[in-house]
Length: 221
Length: 377
Image 1 (cartoon, rainbow over the protein chains, first blue to last red):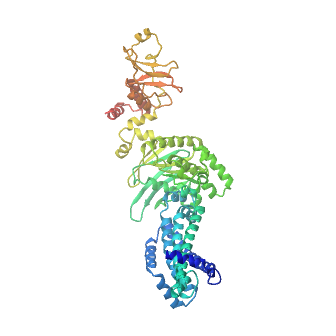
Image 2 (cartoon, one colour; image 1 turned 180 degrees about the vertical axis):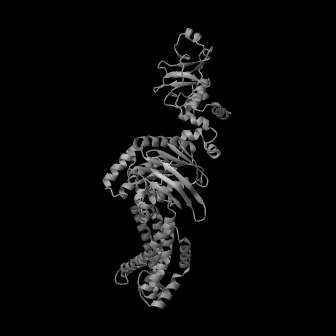
Image 3 (tube, chains in turn purple, blue; image 1 turned 135 degrees about the vertical axis):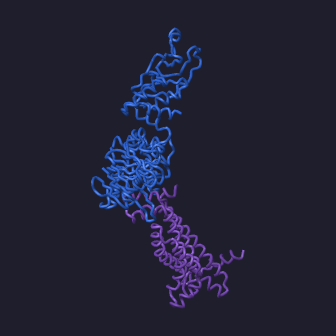
């Protein structure tokens, strides 16, 4: 198998494990981009999703915005932001955030909106305030779905953050883009493998958070 | 006391859910709002704790307008029970019950102790405290719902079709439990249902509402059954209201006879001497074994049906026993199940007529009899 040979060669080369272009530092750069973009997208998507889901209003507007955002090509957006802003971290963050907001926003909205209305009615009837109803009654029940929105956003950011290398930034995309340019397919396959590994780690992390944060009464286990 | 004073709820689209409704809900009793769907019974209930705000009119709680009271404090002072219980599935049973005490700022320990106390009161096993709602049956969940509403010991309990979603056997258990709890606690309960039987069983007072949110009749259940205000109420009560009304008459005045009761080991002369067409055979302890046809060899006894307990059971239960019995005679037993006598359909019929004339000192007894005949036919 060609690909397996490439992978073996890439990871077997000790030169790839040191220095600013080594696997550890590229990996950490990639993780940093991902966390930054995910945090920014969550800061936008979660509050809006929670509020609209709780009130049940604004669902149509959300669908329109989300669909429009999904239609934007990340690569095109990256080139456009670099042209407008110049090189740096910000123009890379823009397409990543635009990519990640819709899944977070839409699933959070849907998750909160579809919570069984009976406990919400009971909570209101017992004299709970609206914010307490949202955070103590609706969110705990909606949490598995909200986490799944964050998870798919995170995985999409991990895979798309490779484009940062195209505008002279680091991250695991460096190997893919440099490898293509240098016709070093060992590097391309190695970089792609690392991106896939990071995506799998992300999935595992979300699984662990779900186990820890979701009540057994909601998990039903 | 809760006073609903010419309250109207009109929605922006013009629908009138409640139309100039006035009701005085007495303290420490169960007041049932009953009616077909769309009669505004739930809306009325929800206006008491301001889940719905009235368009016109006022609702007074102990003389104070509920609309002038802070909404959260008002709601925390009233227990609220809904259909399907509406439990918080992410919280344990004990934490569900402790909701309002925690909202009121009670310490964790005190709230937990209170939850344990209430679980016992509503008949839930203490071992369920750490379970989650999905692990409980529908009936158990509804008990938790009632316990949760009682947690902060509110004087008022609002119950919106609490027992509608459980099967009839469980529902009967929950109804009996509610009556027992009410005997112990004496809350002011407003209870919404679409089930007239439930209304008659639970209500001290029953308000029958009709479509468009208008009050059709407000009366104690016995009066509702004997004197429905109009054709709507009569129709809503159903075809067998005459029979159901018998639930309100005691059976302790029934004249029992023991002539036809014989022990299984009675001597043959006694059997021969008996005049009744059927003889009730009892075992050595005096419990009924079955009916023996006079002249038969006694090898096969006829079923004695379900006996009734004079005093505890109503005339309805006695009549039911007689109707179900193959001999037309009902068997009366004491608390231990020992036969105290038997009574014929005719005797029960006379007792019913006597009870009717006592209930309504009407000079003309014919309408009452006419009613019975109509029901029987």
